[in-house]
Image 1: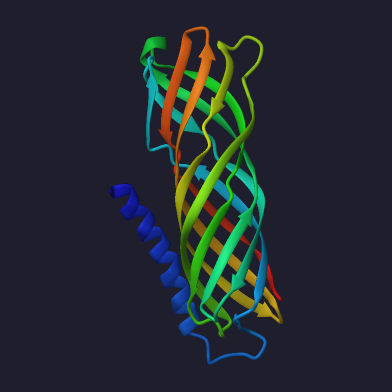
Image 2 (image 1 turned 120 degrees about the horizontal axis):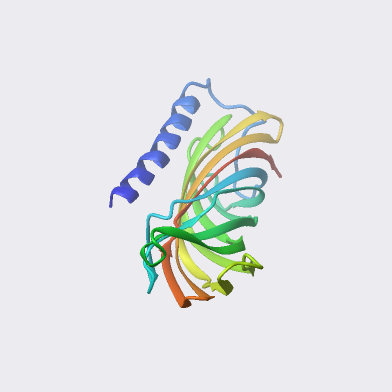
Length: 227
């Protein structure tokens, strides 16, 4: 519950900052405007930070950690009305996964290896002040995370092979579009994805199974063009 409240506070702060900026503008602009039938394409640089708040490793004990990553992302938003849009994203990131603080290993760590993550996400959005230069929005939707090209650490590692289970998750979103000129926009966007997964490792210690709530926080900045 504390985690959900924290995420909600972050998303609310982003929304309120965008709303305050929008309300400080004077009226509308003929070059600014999200309207029914519009398609917005954005390119972002995103930071993906797995929060790793809850996990268990059987039978050796310990905690699961996954590293953060930077990557490009492309998204497409189609407006069914001036206020309502649906967004889909395309992007992939690479992460290292490690089991840490393992009692069976005297509190040391065991690196599982690296994996690529493909997280297709679709959100339904509500855009505030769609005809003004600064337009904040909120969204919610579904995510399906695919883990691929998973690699063990290699020679000298007790991990021979491992894999992660693909799974569904829920996504919450908040962002702000700023129409800087013509059909061009600057964008700031934050998504919180609630994602659980299971890792299975074949190791020198035998079969190890880890369950973890990765719960990645995805923050991005970029530019967009409205068609």
